[in-house]
Amino acid sequence: MTVAETHALERAPDGRAGPGLLGRLRERQARRDYEASIVAYAEAVRGAFREACTGLSICHYVQVAAGVTIRTPRVGEVRVGPPTSLTVELLPGQEPRDFTAKENGPRLAHTLGAHGLRVEPIAGRWVRLHLLDADPLRDGFGLPPAVVHSGSEAVVLGRTEDGVTLGHAITDPAHLAVQGMNGSGKSVFTYGLLAQLAAAPDVLIAGSDITGLLLGRAWDGTIHRAHQVTGTADIAAHAVLLEDLVAEMDRRLATIPPRQDKIVPSAGCPTVLVPLEEFPGLLRAADGLPRPKRGEGVPVGDRIRAAVLRLLSEGRKAAFRVLMLAQRFEATAVGGGYARDQFALRLSFRVPADSLEMLHGTDARALGQEHANADPGVAYLSGLGRDCQRIRVPYLGEYGEYVDRVQRFGRRAES
Ligand SMILES: Nc1ncnc2c1ncn2[C@@H]1O[C@H](COP(=O)(O)OP(=O)(O)OP(=O)(O)O)[C@@H](O)[C@H]1O
Image 1 (cartoon, rainbow, N blue to C red):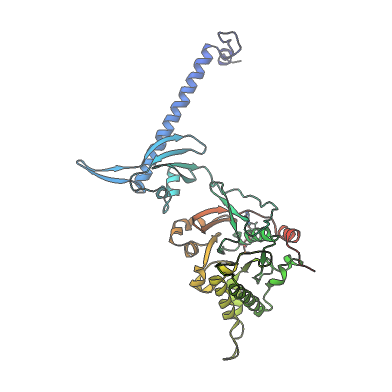
Image 2: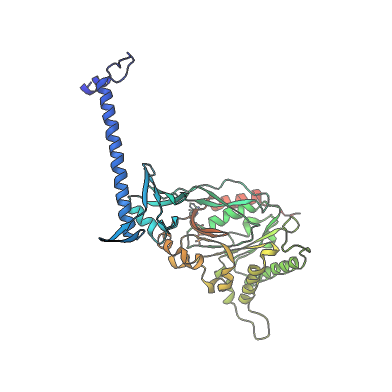
């Protein structure tokens, strides 16, 4: 036993076993050293924050008699984490998002030795900046085998960086655009979405899928299967299906009851979700077909474009929701800029920076570079009153699990 250990085991004055005088002195010293190190660390964070704000121009330049002086947002409490956080008072005219605008977020975080930064408005002009040690979306999460019992119940879309689970009811008046490069996770996301909706008695999943994986065989025996067209052997069949859906939409629009401006979905008149898997591929295949001679009909590609445009522009009131999937939402590839503008809910898995901006607007420009290398299942979501935010979508599992869930939960066709 060392001398230090002997002292530490001395008896306390009241006779109870515990640290003796020397031990207590050492404890006190250790506590003081620790507190001093915290104060020094907090000062270092304050200094680094001030310098980063100056470097990134998150500051005010004030003219004084001696020249120009720089004011940076005042740091209040520094809380040692992990994750470390600091309260900051915004300067007049500043907004919480100024800390993350452009590339400020990652640059501030890196100066402060962190991976990322999250800004939490507290009250008045005060915000709390959380310095994240790691990407909060690094870990995936599974999609439990749960289904909704009505289209008005929210399906799980994903989880935000703050750990909030985002839901979306398919009855909300929004068409959905999903883009992502090969292997970015858009199919797995869509499997999860459709599996959650497969059992709802007031939802019909009717769409087109040239891959034959999302729709088709997996849905055999369900009520939805008769309303799905797959493969590339008969591209005209995709046009026929979409035109049938437009005819049903027209019928619904013509029968909206008086004093109502939209269809209220029910089991008899379900919300029709129209997945269009790899839609640019469908258009390419259709445009590659021989064109009919003059006066002998409309080219299949044009028929598909016209039908989808009508579903997009008029379908919301008739309880039609289009779910379009593409590697990238270039206007020409998805039926035109007007068609693209109809998507109220937009989701981008890993895509090049210009594709992200194309779908989410210029606000997303700053996010582009990082997102071009995003992990599978990590996406940007915007629309329905939400700012563009980064989420992780749930992982349903391998393809076989999707087929199993559709077969287990999918509403059966009446025999
Ligand atoms: N949410 C997720 N969490 C974790 N891993 C995922 C997630 N989504 C997808 N992955 C992984 O990424 C792989 C590719 O996903 P997916 O097939 O959905 O990509 P994709 O964008 O549809 O590609 P493609 O256009 O080639 O079909 C999956 O096999 C899975 O291993």
